[in-house]
Amino acid sequence: MSITIVRPTDLGPAEIERWRALQQADPALDNAFLSVEFALAMGRLRDYVRVAVIEDGGRIAGFFPYERHGFGVGRPLGGFLTTCHGLISVPELKLNARELLRACRLNVLEFDHMVAGQPTFAPHEADVRPAPVMDLTAGFDAYAEQVRANSPKNYKTVRYKQRKLGREHGDVRLEWASADPALLRTLLGWKSGQYRSTGRVDRFAQPWIVRLTEEMHATATPGFAGVLTMLYAGDVPVAGHFGLRTATSLVGWFPAYDPEYARYSPGIVHHLLMAEHAARAGLHQVDMGKGGREYKDWLKSGVLLVAEGRIARPSATAMVHWIGRTPLNKARTIVTDRPELYRLADRVLKAAGRLRTGGRPSARSQKPVKP
Image (cartoon, rainbow, N blue to C red; front, top):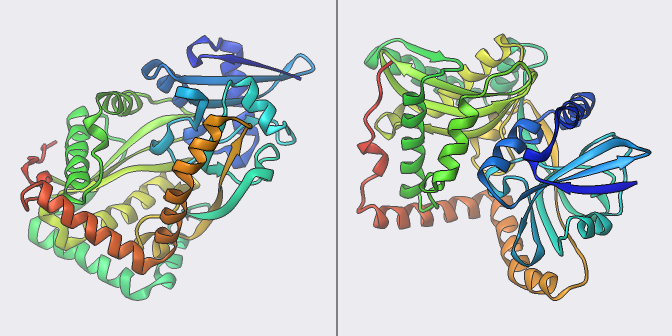
């Protein structure tokens, strides 16, 4: 078995097709963040992206995309931007994880959304957590019945708000897979405002993330595409989402809404209509990602398992990294596991956001773009 390290842009047509074939052959790898198209885009935009090409008996057995930062600190491809990572390989592939790190010139690798149970990384999993999904394999009607059973009150309230939004602002409809870049800019404006008003770091203040999103939005193939959905009330967009899809699944990425319409819960209304259109488009599931908001608990109809963990080779870098990161990770886990602490942390961040924006949600200045 041999391991060669390359940049994504060095992959040839044969390697790219092999990547796709390995991903399609294993249902556990059905996530757009594991697709070669995402790795190629990241490689064009960030110089620290690498791919380990693993060969066994002269045939490619797997690919491991990753980021190599200073002092040999490794991160999964996309880091904080992504909700799934791992080896794209034949199912039975098992490597010595520390030998893989050595080949990748990494001293330490920390992960928190690894495909659970992969033989190479399973011995290093510190925790395995459920990621909620909208399971659409039996069709939208069956999914909607499950959501109604999860929380009849919530379901009834959201449908009432949907009708109220339509009465007061015009017919409610959802546009699936919009190719309009102006609508994407509207969505990103809402999301930036949300980040700032809730005390989070504005990801779209980084130009390369905007470029990545725009590149993904412009990509549309049968096996991989960026999907922009937009909820309208009359002719005005009020909520939307941008995510990535494979041939059979959609992964959630950037949901947001116009805060002027917050009283109608447009984000939840949008998610239900998005699930309906996803089912019509032949998708089997929408991956909402682990952690986050309570609404995921009653919108879900299934879960995927993702793992958290850390691998290190003996080195001063690994020790310093452990000292700096482990307490923070433990605190984050405690907060996200306890709803009352999550709500408290959310209120604190929102208060900080209000101070930073002078008490005004900055997304309000974003004017809706009419179709």
